[in-house]
Image 1 (cartoon, rainbow, N blue to C red):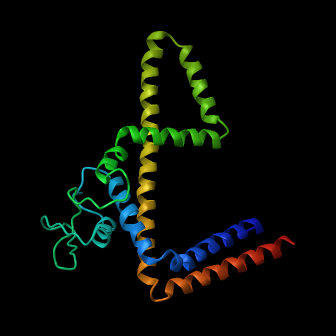
Image 2: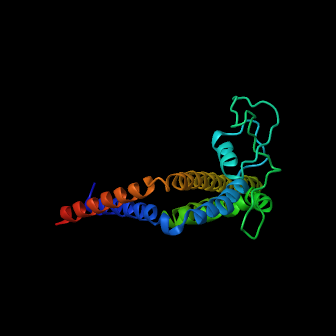
Image 3: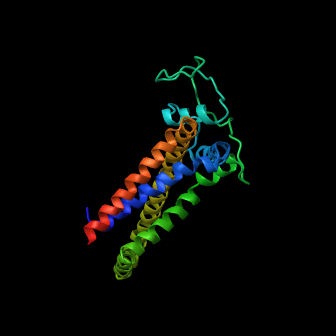
Length: 229
């Protein structure tokens, strides 16, 4: 690993360590409010519909069970046999809507996030970003395909053009679905990580870990500067 890359890794460790050390200043109640009033409703709204799932994944059940005010819904035995703390199956339900400090309710946000229009918009933005990252090569390919299509007979160019439009829309929608999945997983990791921080702050473990990360980050940056000499 080269010196600049090593220095960047050290900075990442510094940021993580500083966050863990700053938890005391943030206060646990504010961290809990962020989890329960912003992240969990956003995660709930982003989950694909129809909901509940036939086989809810463990992480979804964990978040619903751990964060949304300990609500349980019992609707028959689950296929994997997981039970909650009082012996009943935990099944997330569309009837359970977590409280949110956001101006839009999670149920309305769910309809927006899971709509095809949202996927197309997100996919289009990703395609624009990819085109910029690839130095407009996607745009060049599209222009070449359009010129080739216009050079064909009309009875051949029209069905091929329609098929091409459908393929482009499908590709954009798939890019939007990838953004949707990444958004859900990012929220899941954030909720689980912040919940762990909340549970371990009182014991002092979070502060110790924050100091260790800061020390490691500082050491990496010192070594990177030494390598650059």
